[in-house]
Length: 278
Length: 215
Image (cartoon, rainbow over all chains, first blue to last red; front, side, top):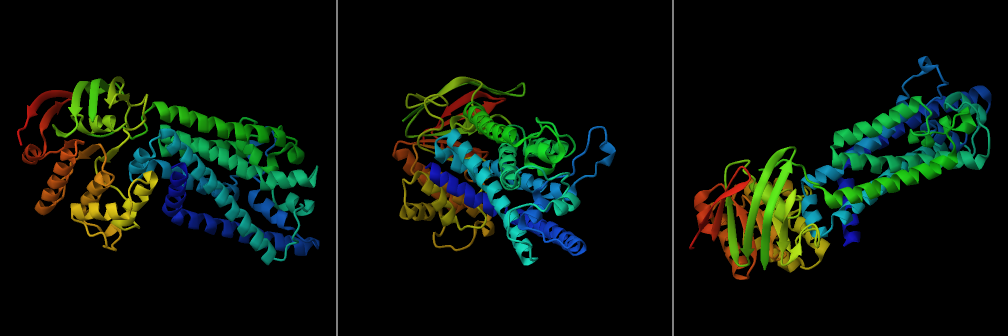
């Protein structure tokens, strides 16, 4: 029964969000085209060859590091924020609207509130991973089409000039992990956390909470603002902040597991329907 | 089949939505709930369906306590408020998706239920093209297709024409004869008199009157 619930959520959740997924893809294409133009200009000026990872860094490398007491340097990182906002929007409403409608029939047939919640968590995580596959896939395609070297290492001159990275120190492998794994891990954890808030309070509160964390993390490099672990530009190895990979690998799964458990306990004991009615 | 409500209270944000409701319902009966808007009919139905947890009191179904021994009634069909289905699918496909979750009925049973409520199982129109009456009929078909032991219908005859109403009556009678518990809420007092064996009148979350109907 659990498998059928998950299949239902995957099909229905994707179908409900087709337009939003289309907009997400369009945004990624636009960001990539902007990146490709800047990278190509830079390549010509400096006689360098960008790699596929440089393109990924442009899209997913994170916003500029703001040194302490220099908030005046802050510029809202629109290009980096847009995909995050779209992901939050895509996952923010489905669970609640489904419960308001057809999902009610699904819920009573599932015989279990927990199974219903777990299925929504799985849908949520698969959707976020799928969106990142789209993000990376489109970026790699644009990079290849633009003649990028098909290697996964950063070109320091390019990423330090165009991708908000202050320094490229440390191992190539660590850069790769941070760029390819951590944004997904952070986003998956944040999305389940957001869905928990959306179902307990309301989708708009879930959205505001998650996006506040995202927004604050673009300014402050605090460990508690765990979204920092998804930004290479905010790591100790690029800007000397307290953000390190080991902490991110610990905090994000803990937040994910914590949200799933909190949801399980909550939905097993409290009302999960909108509280209006005759 | 036995359903027992023991001193059900439900409080939402300091408002008493349900006040000390106790009822025992035996199988083979149609129970009607009537009362003004906001009197607690839908909340009571949601509580029986396991969708709302009572603040205090118990819902016991065949000796099993809802929320403790079972999360939802083991065999239940509901139509609470407006039916809502997937817009891009036909009525049949919508019901097939839901039926696949429990897997206790096949396509033939679904088609036969659709015919019983007056819908054409071969109708290729998507749900979004359905009229209000067709949507309501599909909602009823959804509630009864798995032949559940408890059927909860909130305003089942809303937007349904006279021939449809007769079909609904026939379905409810068949279920009653099979010993099922049927709980309906209906604004139409006349129709309620025709459908229900016992009618409970509700006001401000309390049951204030009971009428036994000799149909």
